Image 1: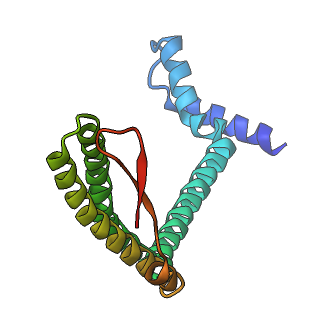
Image 2: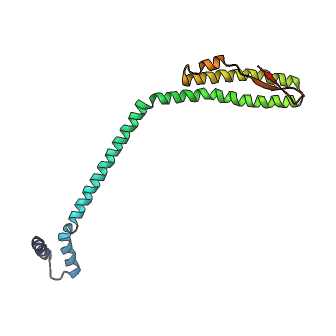
Image 3: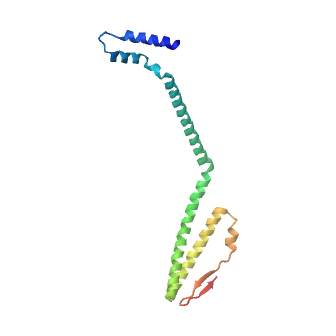
Length: 176
């Protein structure tokens, strides 16, 4: 009943808005629809606005929680980890350079032994011994920085052996 009364009221309101008898049927229909068009999908419009507000609220909550989680992890959990990672990157720079240099010196040593060039072999061995000592020290300091005293005894007390090519021969000799 309420809907039929509302419809009758709207029809009367639309009829009262007509200004003249010469008005076209299209204009009368347009005025009639404009007088009650806000009622057509009013409940759907309200639910759509409610849903939009809820989605925006949840997105805001998600942004706040994500920002809080980021700040918590970066400032409290990963502060020391980031510093340690930066130090490890710094430590490995020299280690990488020494490793590549030793590879080239080993190649030069092998070529000098193949050509029976004793002076080039002696120079390569001397430089390689220097680089190997630097590499060992850097490797030791890297492990001490990472693990503390757990590996210090191994590197301080360990005796390592190396084999060296004999010039002009296809044999190797043990170098202590």
